[in-house]
Length: 286
Ligand code: NA7
Image 1 (cartoon, rainbow, N blue to C red):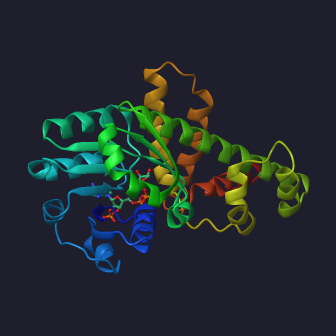
Image 2 (cartoon, protein in one colour; image 1 turned 120 degrees about the vertical axis):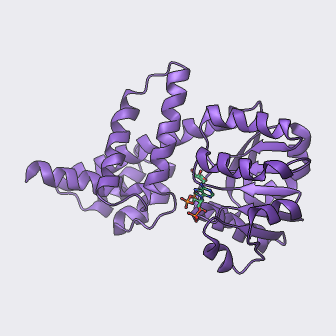
Image 3 (cartoon, rainbow, N blue to C red; image 1 turned 60 degrees about the vertical axis):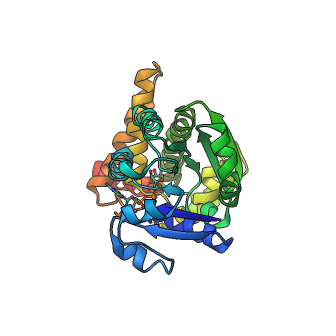
């Protein structure tokens, strides 16, 4: 199997590592070419070379603006090409991308992922896929290398809706967990003791499981950046507005993550919300 891959950020690099470790011939391109050069994989100097060379191209870039820029740049070459877009997009844009690829005679698979760096490296992501079924079936062997589970959701936009709902919840659960820990510490709990207790009660969650070490060590090396989570919260807000959801707590929680940006945490893991809450508390009590 052979693919092109665009976007060597945190998630992209982990996915590329997984694909190539399983024998997929991956040629990469990244906007900052240095990341492609040091990847140890075959790379091309321009996006045009990549689209010319490969029939199937993965995208894993920051946001919908980045995807739009790339598709525009590739537009003369998109006929018969398959674009598998693993970026998390906003709903209105992702619907445009489906239409755009159709117009150009190509195929667009919307494919946001659940899980970040570690599951990606282990091939344990969950993939949410919308687009034509025959295209999905064609690239399924590739997707299975990356994932423990693929949800084929067919209708354009449905995969993005599911992803944004998931990340909305992720943001809220992480903030709730962090604020509970900060309170517990104020009360006098040792953090480890408290987390061990929470793990055994209704306070347990997947988020607690995967972020426990980071919270204990206060080591917020990014697996999914705080900045990208805010981007997803913005996209989720559009969804709430369109579908009349009630997102009061989402707006409040987003403001807390935003404070993280002011504290210089944009490139840290989103679990650094713990640090945001600690800082706010110091400011209030000081
Ligand atoms: P990162 O680590 O923030 O990486 C973002 C990637 O997107 C990185 O390769 C960037 O290139 C690339 N990028 C950003 N803007 C552009 C534009 N305008 N054109 C081309 N490439 C661009 O994100 P993750 O890897 O964690 O996540 C990627 C996606 O998956 C994101 O949508 C998440 O929400 C889910 P650079 O290296 O800066 O040149």
